[in-house]
Every structure is written in C-alpha cells, then in structure tokens.
Image (tube, rainbow, N blue to C red):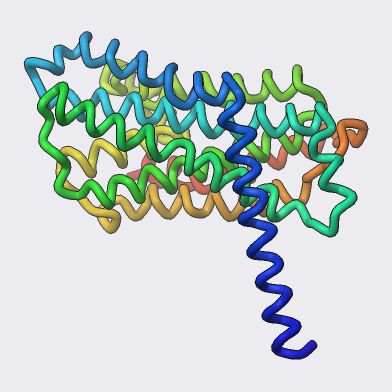
Length: 286
C-alpha cells in the first residue's frame, strides 16, 4: 500500500469517528434519560448536600459536596448513560444498521466514550461555578488537573458501562447488572455517606470499590492542592480500566439483539475491576 493510500485510509477512519461522535451527540441530547441522569439528578443532590453541610456558611464543606456530586454524576453518566443506552440501541436494532457498513465496533465504542465525556464536561464546569459564585468557595488552584482527573474517571466508568452492555442479553438483565454495580459504588465509596461513618471492616472493603478512588482523588486534589502526579495511583487504575474496558467491549460487541452471549462471558466484567482489586489489596496490607 502506497503512502497516499495509507493517508487516505487514515483520513477516512478519522472522518468515520467524527461522524459517529456527531450523530451520537445529537441522539443523546434528544433522550430525556440522558438529561436527567447527567444534569438534573446530580444537580438536585448538589443543592441537597449543600444545604445539609451548611455550605453557604462553611465554604470548606464544598470539598465534600463536590466529591459526592461529581462521583454521582460520573456513575450516572457511565453506567446508565453508557450501559443502558447501548443496550437500548441494540434492542431497538439501531446497531444493526451500522452492520451493513464497512465499520468495526471500535468507532462506535470510542464515539460512545467521547460523547459521554462531551455531555458530562459542562456539568463539571457548572458545579465548580455554582460552588464559587453561590457557595463562595475559592477556585481550586489546580482546576485543570481536577478536570483531567474527573474526565479520565468519567471515561473509565463509561467503559465499565459499555462492558456491562456487551454481556447483557436483554434490557432487563442489563438493568439488573447496572444496578448491582451502581448502588454499591454509590453508597460504599463515600459519594453519599462519609467513609469515616463505616465500621472498620467496611472501610477496608471500600478499598475495592472503583468509585472510592474517584472520591478520594477529588478530595485529595481539592484539600491538599495535589496535581495529577499526586493522584497517579487512582489515575493509573482508571486509565487501565479504559484500556481493558475498550478491549473487552470490542471482544464481546454484538450488533443484533438475537445474538446471545454465554453466561460464563459475564465474568469479563471482573476484568475491568482488576486494577481496583490490586489497589485494594495493596491498601489493605499497607
């Protein structure tokens, strides 16, 4: 293959990725569930937590409030926005339409991750703007590092959602799997209740919860002013999850709802949790 042909092929691949991302964004913004789980649901809890922690009188409490609401937004965007939506598209035979085109699962999966990030980014900006202008919290000195860290976390949980969508044979099964992942991460990570309230054995268990590293990373960066380098361990775990999740998602990708997957294949969900299992073991023995 000549250099010109390779360059032309690369340009076509880039165009296919950009076209799919544009289509994905248009479809996503038409769905009420996307608006609810990405903006209204976490925004409601932002004000509830702000009131409970008296953040108007104690701006320092916004560190806890932001770590909670950002994590809730990431989980909703990744597991429900990524997982449930992907299952819906397969159930409604939307993915089948792409099958007849010369396209691989890679652009679809990458497009879904980029779309999730693009939709979620305005929410992050709104949260920090509200914390600053309404609750009088100073702008974080490392705001750029925080945006990078939360963005990596969002894409990581989006990849977990896509893996769940890949192993679910029906909408009902996918909803159960998403909820089995969502609620433990929501309630045991420190996103809703401070981990200090838990008994000792449960505090050790939280080291194995992926969302715990997102909560702790955000808190460390806001309280101690750490940059991306200071949170390299959770950042590395989240980045590894993106790679593993993308690989597993491509391996198990199905175009049509009639294509069923073996029960044993559901164990692939554990593969994306391996980085957090290793970190949890290391934290428990530290």
